[in-house]
Image (cartoon, rainbow, N blue to C red; front, side, top):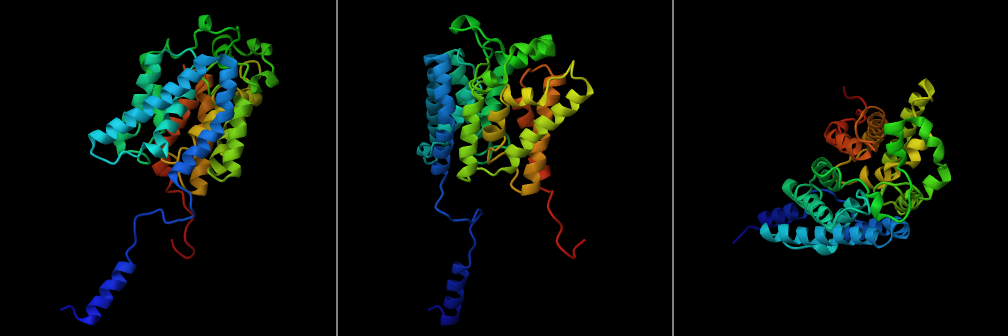
Length: 323
């Protein structure tokens, strides 16, 4: 028979057992977070369908469905509980779809969605363990493997319009007079689905900020990093480098600021690390556009900054009275 004092101490030890973090309990779940992010993407998805028609809807639906099925298959192979009803895989697939043009072939969409889950998440341990935003891993694989298919096919769309970032890279700033800032905000520019719905993506980003699903530090620092770096180049030589406004409203800048750079698994947690992370990623966007071989630059900039997250987490305030 266990002595009363030992039994009492054992009960106290059980009550004092601390589970792994996080500890914050406020009723919010991963499922609710994913649904909020999907709702934030809804205006951009509607604008994409209006602009590109059914091909855009097909890309989004196929990517989301394939990613969900791939996640269920990988979980089954690992003998783990199948929890695809939390919409994490579906959201990852939709994010990947927004990195693709509306004219992307079905097999490219399917392969990319599978890579998003398999190579972007599963090999690192699943949701929350990936060091880089999972859709960006798939984008990089597809961009390096099938570059032609990753560009929009002008023969399959019903209107003729240019990609601003492509025009800047290949022809210089003298060709940018054809673009109107309001038109760019309203999505009248070619590129991925997340490159042409600037205003709708901004509305979705503000919704996430207002509902506190994301913090303001990364998006604000990211946009400031883009604008600040572009302003420096523009001040040096406006005949060679584009204006800060151009860099903010073209390509995947807004999409990257609110949806890619804020990935919970691959971005820092602390306030100061998040600010530095956003500034680095934003500055790299302009550097890649100015000197790199990829016109947009946002995906590679966010991926590179994500690799620095473990180091940035060490940027913490010092305790008072401690050296």
